[in-house]
Each structure stands twice: as C-alpha cells, then as structure tokens.
Length: 409
Image (cartoon, rainbow, N blue to C red; front, side, top):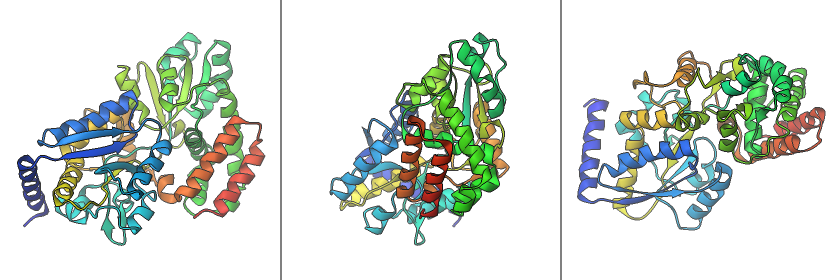
C-alpha cells in the first residue's frame, strides 16, 4: 500500500472516530497579536469542522512569557492537550521525562519525511529516532520592514539594503520620524542583533559562531563590525518606547517609524492593516545584503495523558495541522512559509514569494532555537537587553558575547 493511500485511510479512520466521539482539546499558544490571532483561528476552524472542539488557551505575551507557564503546567500534572513551542531544543527535558506523546506513527502514516522541507525541521522534532512534534511553519528573523509613507514624508527614496537605511536615518529623524522601531524586550533585540550580524559579518562568520560555537571568530574583526553596526542601530531606536513587537510593527504601518527589524510574522500585522507590499511597505530579507534565512518556526507538542480517546484526538489534530489545506490557510494568514514542499502558494504576497524563492534556492540556516540550548539563548537575549538599554560599549558587549559562545552548549 502506498504512503499516500495509507495516510488517506488513517485520516478517514481518525475523522470517523472523531465524529462519533467529539472531543474537546485545550490548545495553548502565545499568538495574541492581530495577525497571529487571525492565523490561529484557521487552525481552530479546521479542527471544529471535524466535529471536535478547539478550546483556545492563548497566553498573552511573548514566547518567553508563555513557555515557562506551559512547561510548569506539564511538569505539574495539569497538561493541556496540545501546545505551541518552537521546534528545537526547548522540549528536550520534557521528552526525556516521558511527558510528551510520540507521534512517529502519525508522521509515518502521513509521509512527513517526504513532505517536510527543509528536512531539518522534522529533525528538530526528532529525538532518539522518534518524532515528538509536528512542525507547522517556517519563520525567519532576518527581515527589515520599511514604511513607504515615512520615507515619502521625508522626501527620501525607500532603502534597498541596510547601508542605505543607515544613510537615511539622520534625515528621517530631522523629518520627525523615528528611524528604527524596537520593542523593549531582549528577544526582539537579539533578533535585530542576529539579522545585522548576518548581513554585516557575513554568512561564513555567522556559521562559525552560531553553528561551530567558535569564540575566536566572535572576538574577531567581522563581529567587531557587526557590534558597531548594532550600536548604531541602538542609537536609531533610542526613542522607541514601545514594549511589544507588534506595537513596533504598528509604528511602521502608521509611518511614525521608518523601519523595524523583525521576523516574517510581522507580515500578519501588515495584512490585518490591509497594507500592500510594494505600495505601503517594503520587506528586505537578509536586510537586502545577504538573502539567506534561518529556518526556525513553530511546532505543536502533545502532552501524554491516560485517556485513549484524548490520545486519538491528539494524533488526529497533529495530522490536521500539517494537511495541505490547513497549511495554506494558516501560513497565508501568519506570513510564514509552509513546512510542506508540495503545496501551491501562488496566492502568497511578494514578501512570502521572496522567502519561498530563498527556500527553493537552498539559502537557509538553522535557527538559534536549534543551534543553542535554551539556557544559552536566554543568556544571549539578556546580554542584548542590557546592551540596547544601557551605556555598554560595542567592545564590552562583544567580549561578553564571545564568553557566552565559548561556554555554549
């Protein structure tokens, strides 16, 4: 029997079982901005259409706020039925403790090994040969978003790369426009640092530090240039007093800021605001200098429970989240790229098409959630929060950064 036929039969059996015994599943996530809420509703609608019920467990705030709550509930014996996490190393300890459901049978029935692209996303869900999560999207962090209205008001051409943006910053400020919007959270500032580093230091140096954990390169001239560029970005964002990333995105949407460095999930906010890529805003992958993207993103994990009916429903939901129709509807709303390499995304906007082109050309990198442990990632975010908020020099920040890389696991 072919894999496709087996998947169809399994899906039919699961749907039939679900219709006969409708199940409520609580699903936790941290998608609460306008664009994110629109996207997660696509999952909920698809699940409810099976006759089951999606009980939404949205947790306000970023992943940094939500993850400890999610993990605490699982460890404390009050697990949800399904939860968003980033695929990578965040769930390692939960898996090793036997607290997360093995989805290997679902993955094999659905032929995930043949459809997930890049394959590293499925690898990041795999531990000791077993699959414990379903990847649902590809998110990349190396983007700068530019407001056409802000540049038009300042009488400037919209930049086409990071260096052109730097050249316009003083003129934007003179026109009463904040050059760079930035939320006051370490993870946002760490995204900006990573995007600028990849653009300015180059991919070879980035690989050496982020993949090989080479502290000598982190102390070297390529990273010196990167830290000096980040220090300049810090000055451009000095008057950015918002907290959350979507508030910073809104500054670009409204033209009160010229630009924001943020992941491609910002597209969802532009979409909700009914702005058009190429007319109202521009998006530059790799900051217009080095068009490669990291392939991080979101995945869903399913805590173990003792009820076979719930377990069956969890597996049905896992299969649904990666199904072709749901992948298209969710990712079009989210602004992310689908994890399936076999679906039609011709209706995607120009920014998504740029991302799809980079993905097709193989210009992808692993995300920090995959290359660094959660402890190392939090240390890096804390460092960037201090660097962006205070008087730390670029040289001081680079030295501390290199020490973290040297000790990274």
